[in-house]
Image (tube, rainbow, N blue to C red):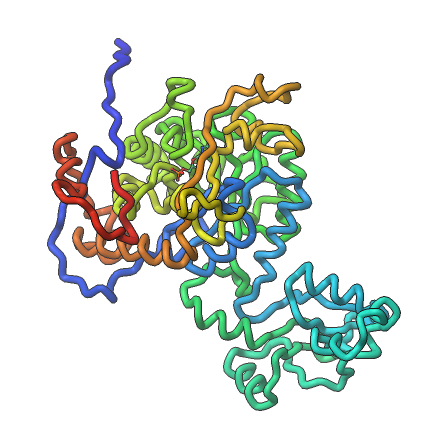
Length: 498
Ligand code: RVP
């Protein structure tokens, strides 16, 4: 007979990992993991698709650190596609589709383009794509601003012949050319003199600064973007693919929904979309995960209610404690070779290893990243301390139509309503302490995970999954785990308290 009380759900604070025999040096430890069936990351961190967490700046920073960002979808399709484009054009080596300008454009147009893409120099090409010169901000300086509207690019550019490289140039050869000629930029051309790419010194230096960056086959940073399944979701998906997105996240707060599962199925079948990786979510049960496995999803996102700003469990009474949710979902996903993403509820680095042992390959973070400089929004000063706004995508603020259209309502199955007071929110709005740059936060998170792996005696993520064992703990043990019987006098960079 059906026993409604059969299961006990556990979450991060209910378990600890057992220490295991270890014979590892810190340099042996490798956190490389699978984001999807086909994409690997050096660092198992994903920034959440929320409008106070991930826009282009965060996505760029996450990819540079070896993780990935999911661009939120509380934006028009065009705006979201532009953000994808910004990430894909942030170069880490060779730019194979550089922004160019025509010779008959005015300096005013040049200045505008430079501002839009935050680029200081452009190859100048004719109608057939032949490289005929190069123009930079420097060239603007010698023309009075009053004449920008009437002066053409060809009048100020450095005209061809320029020092160029072949399309097939390698890293060493390019470095040599840049150095020998003291160049800022090296355009790449084919045998007919058509522009095929561009190398800049700045990007070359950056690619050395970020050795673990997540990149596609052409050396561009990886980026993911959220779509729904409702309304114009298909157009959103195909537009984002045209803009170069690597991963689509088809998710809502409740992913075990026919139309969403069918959306994932269609994305993986249609020739126009099937080459992009598709993540389905969110689920919290074995059966929910199995539906996405059957639909052909490339990864499954798990979490119903664990989020710091989430009130789903309180408002609806529905949810599954996150360790159990991840474990149950992995029972369906693991045999099918589909990676699991543990989404929500992370507060400290120790939870990353716990999620991985429970069955996840990566984790998604909201509140832990919302306070960084790279998250959207300005810092707010409260009692002399700096904060940044952080809100649930199911909060009134995110779903409100006040002033602008909300594109995220359907995530929480809310109909268009005439008045905000008719919205039934499943999230709250708040603020988190300002944390400085993302890299300092990821440094602590990855460092903490390294230590987890050392304690467990696991060199790799798959080994951590295989070797990790939990011990269940009590409320008394949790108290023992945190600092106790002491007044903290110095803030630790990786500990925020109970
Ligand atoms: P956290 O990291 O605990 O802040 O949780 C972030 C996650 O919370 C998101 O990735 C998303 O799955 C979930 N979320 C976002 N908005 C809301 C809500 O309004 N209920 N929940």
